[in-house]
Image (cartoon, rainbow, N blue to C red; front, side, top):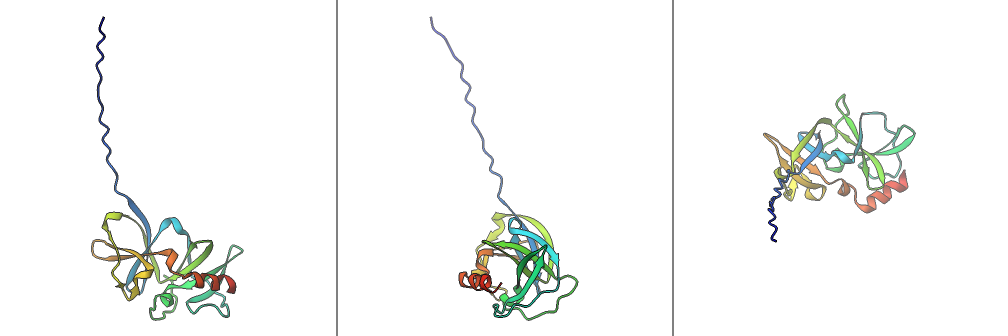
Length: 167
């Protein structure tokens, strides 16, 4: 006796969704930057900053954020932009930087964006006067350029140690 078995072969078609980056965009001067939203804890209005002696020049001081002392880094100073007084748009972006929590002073926070990774390109050697060591990629949006910062490279290891010891 012979048994016949009909076997249907199903081909699995995988459609891979394009990887999207979720970013917070912010401005320093006329330049627009982006940070991955996953590393941002919160965004606050500018508050009074307590100066810290012997801190690196780009460290404005510290703030008390719900009982925790947070060092504040002025990204204008860090990237060599001219100084600017704080105004109603100035914000502090609180991020996790390795084991530390720090705040970055920025001129203004623009928006939360989702962009496809495919529109990003490796950074040229210098973008907006900032060395490529601080930048992971550059995204070309409709009529603007978004500079994606490398959070881990904003501070050198020795600067992190210096910051930890002064706080």
